[in-house]
Length: 272
Image 1: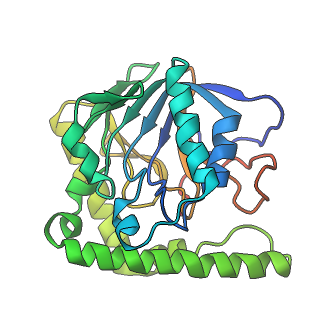
Image 2 (image 1 turned 60 degrees about the horizontal axis):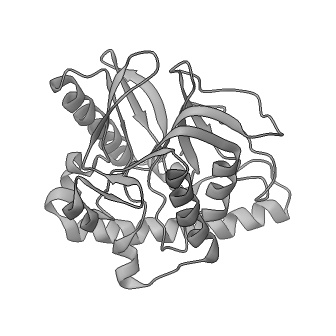
């Protein structure tokens, strides 16, 4: 596992696999421009889209679809047409697509879950993770209210980020991430979620899991199994890449930098 590298510029980088989740296309909070910068920088053999790629929940209230979000869809379809293996695992926000489990759209495989074998032989369960969230499963109205509240935090954060840039304050600061770290119940929810997902991987005799859902990016070991969360593209702008050796790396796509500039590679195992 590699959680810190030195930023590079220049030609695109080739990796074996890219893992993305929680892009939330169709919302104002979606960081489509930054995602496009990331996809231009990284070429891969496999692209795994691990849920909440399109946010049908938010779109039922209002649709915010920008030209850059169109370009994200086009770029993913183009990569699939050109031979890249693209697997789409729907989450709770795009759960309507679960009715099409096992089908292929535009060379994109649509499946409920997937087992990926890394170059160094690790067998990883790829799953969005909402089935391990008791609130989402049994109290959907609470989950919807929480989704609205999270969206509000992200909007407030965008205003605060503008002020930080105006006053030349260094780095990116996440209000949603700060709330998660400071509220004890939120941290307990994250820990419970992680252990539930790991338990599912252990029951299947696998070496670990790659998931999304909770917008809390990390690569770490839990009970000798590998737990990987992709994070999101509304707040932290994080992704997981698998290098040709099988090594996994968490990348935080420099949100403090103007779109189109060279990326900043994540310097911490947890980006929030």
